[in-house]
Amino acid sequence: MRFGVLYNIDYHESVHGTASHYYGAILDQIVALEELGYDSVWFGEHHYAKYSFGSPAAIAVAAAARTSRIRLGTGVSLVPLHHPLRLAEEYAMVDVLSGGRLEYGIGRGFLKSAYDLFGIDTEESNRRYREGAEVLLTAWRAAGETFDVDGEFFAMRGAECFPPPVQKPHPPVYASGAATLDNYLWAASQGVNLATAFFLPRQDFVRDGIVRYRAALAEAGHDPASREVLGVIQMYCAETNEEAADRGWEFTKNYLRFFSGLDSVNPHQADAYEAYRRRGSSRSMGDLTYEQFDQANLSLIGDPERVIAKLRWIEEYYAPDGLLLEVAQGAMPPEMVIPICERFARHVMPLFR
Image (cartoon, rainbow, N blue to C red; front, side, top):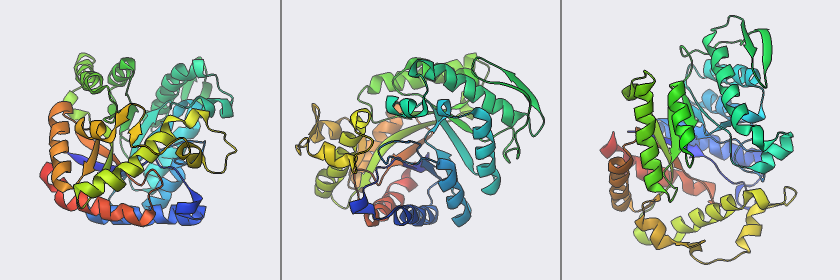
């Protein structure tokens, strides 16, 4: 099993300091993650509420300059919000400048507010996503030669993607699929890898989606063994279960509250998290308590022994090829991130390699 860290994080000036300090701390963490043996580090894309990264490509290149082995992913690149040729060029440069280490996660996102900011009709999002992804793959497969496109949203004659990516025929692509079966099946029809969510309460749906994805790969003439399924899940590997139930759940709860209300937050508000924190401080998230969240294995929160047991269950239930671990969320102080990741790397990862 492969292990990556996904930075889908919420910025809070009172915790993270200035933007330069915030990004500098993340880059320092990535250097440490490479030394700890993690396989990849991924960056989310959002344009709202100081969430994730407006330019995942920029921080991926910065991370590439400071590392030599760890792979660099996007979780996810919001294809419908951009011109696909621009994405093809930008991420081909990431692949070139990193020496062929790009893992390109794609999706259409979940925030209507982002579509409003970019002036794009959400009713078109799925069609834009699929057409854009196909154009991007065409650009990469052209290997520096010119190509034509004649689609609903994009029409080009004599287009060229320079530089071509290092990885051939192109960097591995991971299409997102979570709560809609059609997205699993579309990923299979394109012969690309799948990135899904193991924190969704609809666990049977996700598991069945993975099964259907692998079956559809075979039906489309692709070898399922040559494609990966990665699952996103929150991780807090604590020294004790008491710490996990207290601080680990605190940060997870903070993030889930932030996440669940993103489309209703005022974009001009100084600190989105404060608005959600004022809604209440109980241990429940909606009708889901920490105990329910914990017992359902919707996260990897616990001491190493407990995390190992949860991961054994995930391994058997979903049969994934790897995990993307969400850390540093919910206003977690930056200095806490590496001890948590180090504990996981030392006590958990070796058992699942």
